[in-house]
Length: 208
Image 1 (cartoon, rainbow, N blue to C red):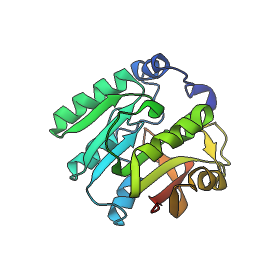
Image 2: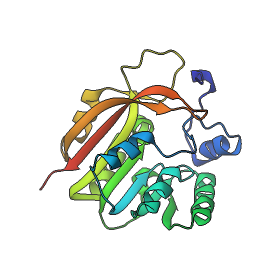
Image 3: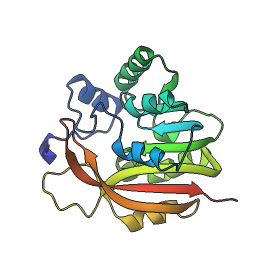
Image 4: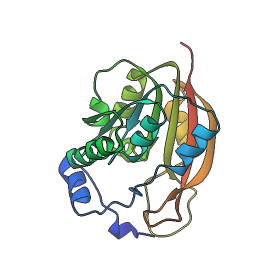
């Protein structure tokens, strides 16, 4: 596993672009998230209008589009979005990609499903309020939310993604969402195999 010293720190779009330019991408396996695939297989969500936060090079957004989802996806890195658009074109699917900070996501109608693999656990350290406001603005009662985040119960050395406690996830979304599950799983490593411990949180926005 990649050590903490090898994992990039980011504060600007240029920082993120540097990671993509140098392929220092411990989060980018180039394979759809196994947990996302599991959740779809369980029937939690079916094809609908969807938003992905922090889409990177678009692997998960493209996977969803190939399965009939109408996908909008955003990322802070212009270089990541350029690559994502190229991949979507090669896959012959439509995904509406935007370069944007999560807190400044496009002004679009609320969506039925939001997917986040590893954006929240980074953004919450610098702008939790902005993230929460974006989620509120971009969902409606009944919207489903799949959140994948670093798990504070990880005991392995070597850093990994930012770590969050289960009670923090519950508290930070309690005002809007009912939790269907919060369960542990492991992120995949780029070279294959299991990586660091994570949380999978499935939530549904409650009726007003």
